[in-house]
Image 1 (cartoon, helix red, strand yellow):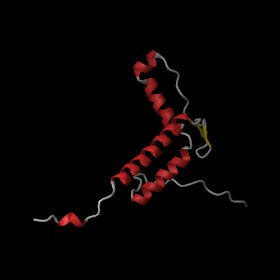
Image 2: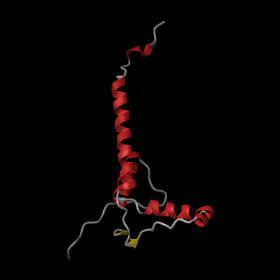
Image 3: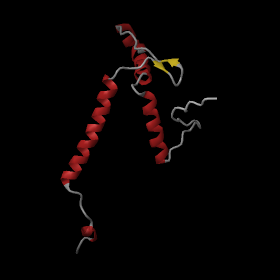
Length: 114
């Protein structure tokens, strides 16, 4: 008995490996950039000072205070934070996800001269 799926075209193995390599290279590049680029100290869009890197002490580490504040700093002071937020927002919008809080992230507003 013949299999009905024999007519399907198979993707060449080399193309699959190439696709995986490209995706890994993109993720690696983004990771290296986020971890090595200078971190901003002020958010112009939000008009506030961003979280500062906490000082490490053994006591603060074991109490959990250091890891909590470091996590806040790491998430708050991401290089190109506004750009990443805009890209993620547009990507989620294209997939059909809507924010639960009703707030949409939009790009910077143009300057309007009166």
